[in-house]
Length: 120
Image (cartoon, rainbow, N blue to C red):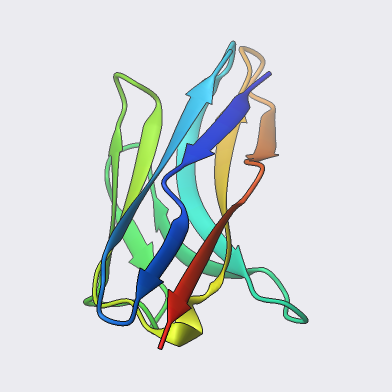
C-alpha cells in the first residue's frame, strides 16, 4: 500500500510562485511514475506533469516553461515548482503515484488534493 501526503498549496497573486510536495509514505510497494493533476470546479481532472522513475518528464502545454516537476527517489517524494502563476492555474492539485508489488501488479494512488488559488 502507498499513502500520498501533499503540502504546499495556498493563495498567491498572479505572477507568483508556489512549490508543491508529495511524499509517498507507508510504501510497501516500489514507486514507479509520479505526477500532478489538477481539477477546477466543473472541469475534469487534467494532467499537469509526469515524471518517470528515471526522471523523464511530460508537461501539459499550458504549463510548459512555467512549471517544473522533479523527484527525490530516496525520499519517494515528487515536487512541482510553479512559477509565473496565472488565474487559470486555480484548481485543486492532486498527486498521483503508480506503484507495483513484488508480483509485478501495478496500482494507482492519489493524494488528498491541495487547493491553489491565483488572484488577479
